[in-house]
Image (cartoon, rainbow, N blue to C red; front, side, top):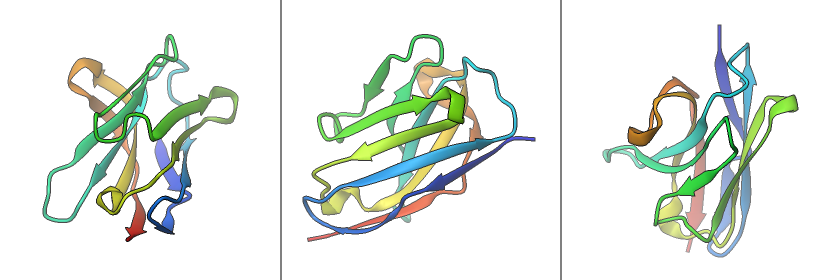
Length: 121
């Protein structure tokens, strides 16, 4: 069985930084794509970043491009999201996702429980 466990969330002032981690518990393909979604209560989930398992290529939503950096350490079964210059609009629950069913449409097989990120003005 596979479980994705997020950590590193918390509260920070606007302009600050946080680094989220996603640890993969269990066995997934070494070439699984991975990524991050976020959700504000009563709003839809927003894809914010992804990383291709085969090449390591990355992409970002316009809302976070230039501020967030996605990375991975395959040997540690861990993916990261470095979040810099955080804004109040970044406040959300952040979800780790893994193993795309269709990377083009950002659909993934596995989802974490979520980590709260709160950015105060």
